Length: 155
Image (cartoon, rainbow, N blue to C red):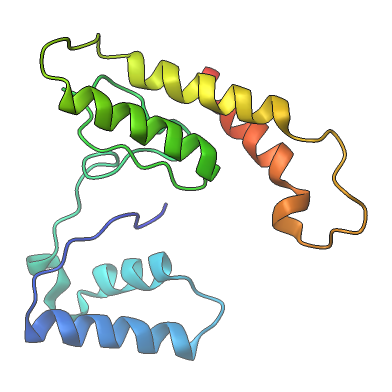
């Protein structure tokens, strides 16, 4: 499980919670932010149970494996985290053009189809074998990461 997105009210209580959360992460490098939050909730630290509301996955954000899983009227947020910049740029340019053009709305799945096409085109341009002298793991693994995202969206 992953915390994903959080909306926080600006208050003394929120500041105390976030400072305590940060300190807990500093004290134990074996725990991640999700585990600390789960501990706070199970022990009701800072009165979390009365003050925090957890929404279902996808309510404020999209799933990373399927960022466009529904038409816009059902999925109001598109989060293209981890997508190549060229893909994000193409998707958001098209979305902006569509939103600004009020007279010809498309069906609800056009944005998902555009994302899959953009990701496919990007994947086809990636080298089969990365340059050997490149030691940056993010560049070395880019082909497999992008192909995996594309495969997950097609399932």
